[in-house]
Length: 318
Image (cartoon, rainbow, N blue to C red; front, side):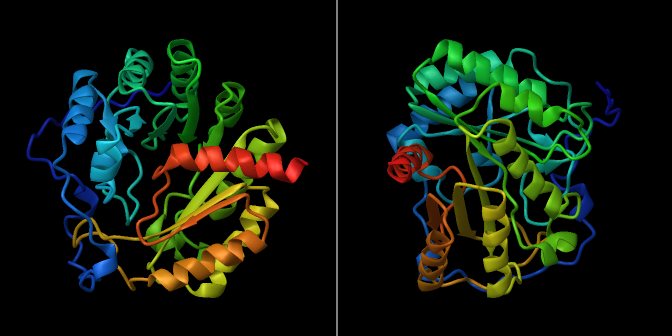
């Protein structure tokens, strides 16, 4: 493992130092269909307390998910492992960027304990990108899956991984731990990668998803994109074809929302009827499951969607 030591300890360090000197980019006002209620329920508070008590991070908070109130009220939290600091600096993402701390060896067990306390029948585990680690954090993912299996044998496990770019054999380590769903998001169309996701490679991500199926065809695969970043409709349809060529089972499409004025601007708010159109087209292309709406996110309604995904596979096998 490569160890990077951060010798700068400044509590006033900005969350996104690479974006500080960028000019502000204004997005248009949010339409009515994108607005959500502020979280203030008892269930939300209970979930927050369990997360805090186990010293965990969630992508719900770190990425500023608009669905946090709804999900946490139902005690559905998406755990973000390997710290709260990402080695990438994507233009759309609100997760903190910089030099991460060393991995917490107790984190896999803490995640398993929180899963049990929340009573989750389906849990989603994601992570920051850890380009500083020799395996990109693959072993840590595998250990987390094993700890959850031991503590909650009946809980199904969905993982949302980074791309493990240039991390040889990392994918094999994660797949060998046998998650029920392997999710890796493309995030946007190929033409937008240089400005939106510059540290990633589109066709590497497609190949990653394809490789999962080659290693273990029983694992469901899933991917998602955001719209409103300047993409064209025909490009979204091409992404669907590329994902189906990799035998991806489940597609999510949601509206991009700008975290701060230093992030990529929203180029357009896509109306609900266009999302409905994307969903219909995606089903005709062979996806077992499609979720497309302005507020769709990778882990939103993940447990219910997993049940539908299994039913869809069973129906096609008859």
